[in-house]
Image 1: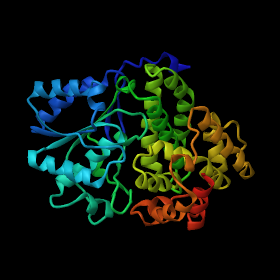
Image 2 (image 1 turned 180 degrees about the horizontal axis):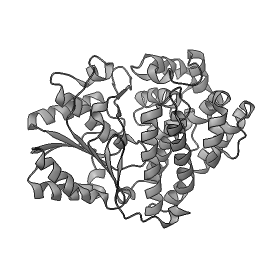
Image 3 (image 1 turned 90 degrees about the vertical axis):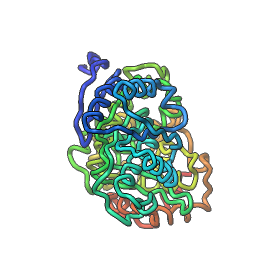
Image 4 (image 1 turned 120 degrees about the vertical axis):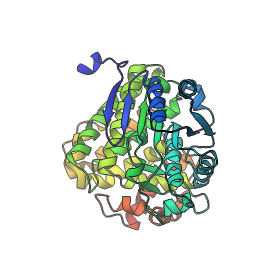
Length: 399
């Protein structure tokens, strides 16, 4: 097949909502990006990262050299954590205001990039807070330019207009989606991802698979979201085992990253429904839970619920992970068991009880799924009417 002959070191440019430099060595495009910043009159950049990955991957060395070369100043916020909070967004924005930042550079996975997107809006809308943003108290149309250096192959946030943040006080984890937060430029470099642990490799790849299963089966699904779903699932099924076996396998990382980027564009177009709407309460209540693991825990139960209404589409996209399916509604349980077996085969063996939840928390989780701002919009896109009974049953059957 043509994939085996692809030169993974040829950096190509992919245009979706963002300009994406993709391929091994793409991080070196930061020298060109820094020059573009300089030409646009940008002198100070707010850099948002987590604590370690931005350095451990070597991305920081390239960024520092590029910014020094072009005379750009940096204010560095390194407080973005997994499942970032609204307080972190406010803190990052405060640093940006104090430094006079004119653009944002986010280095990391979904958490630093989503923090950067949210802070970019606040810096362009003085006086606003992350809480107001995520409650929908104002509708932003402007944000500072954002450059994203992506360090995981899962979220797809480098290619879309979505961001999430958690309000620890209310245990709400809403999402936003605005055109103004498409990254101006994103960098997808597989060579930056060889230090991902087996757990991170697994969790982020499962996130990508969930993105496309949902995007292909929402009420907003299109031929594009179904096509990208089929290809994403095929690529993850084929290349994830190799990356789990050898974290330095650049070809495997390349195709997993490409799959995740496809998935980001897929749900940017087709949107999401049950799995993300029900996972957000899980990681809001337990911020230490990996988003991808939470999604995987819920996925088989959701496949069983939606399959009768989406049998033909799911039979088209699921075979690489669920085996051959005929597209008949009555094979819902077989499809769900196939997905469950695949998850176990790659090492995701947890059920809801294994990640710290109990059956008596189902009413709380169900309430959060309906009460959290924006999650109702996701539930409204589900192919099956999202009643409290349906949501509660999905949680209960995931134990």
